[in-house]
Image (cartoon, rainbow, N blue to C red; front, top):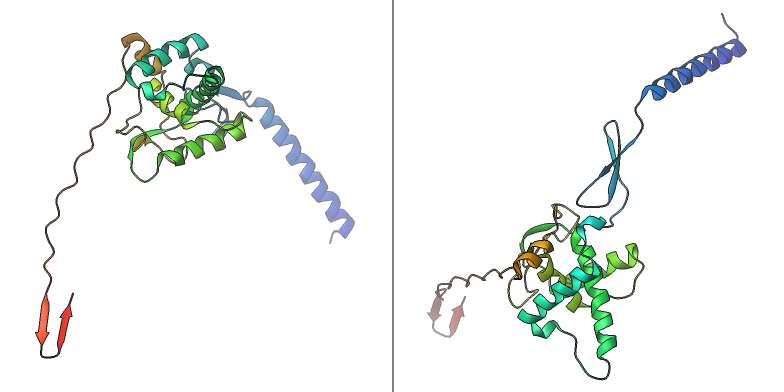
Length: 221
């Protein structure tokens, strides 16, 4: 019968043998491949394991500064209320709008599209975008006017009027993000996506009220 020292030595031998086998198998595995996702950032794949590595938008989905200026002209022509106020602080107002517009375009490049959402106010979407911008871009607050302009600029988000009352975005996660730069179509056509008309709510029938009367007592429900 083997002693305790002999059993320990045998276990060490088996462990060393298994480590050699693992090293041999790993040496035969292909190197990790980086897959450029057109929707989010990058994922790293090895075998059957896929791990997300970020939530930044890819550069090829984003417009240049020149493209953003052209998009602004189209947007302001249809929605002049989105144009920053002129006057004493006109330059500062436009700079703040431009920064918000740029960040919002990046956010929408990875934000999932979906059916019209009637459960969240426009301010909720602005807060969601600001949380992402603070976490990912380390930037200050982004204004709602920049998000409204970006929604129009992308040209692939359903919306209702007033702008932002209902948006065709996925409220949670990044499912179904854009796979092409929809804003390019807006530039080429020179026109914005038309809003979705809200269907009027069906008229409800009057609910009958039953009244029971007895001397000295009346009950209604």
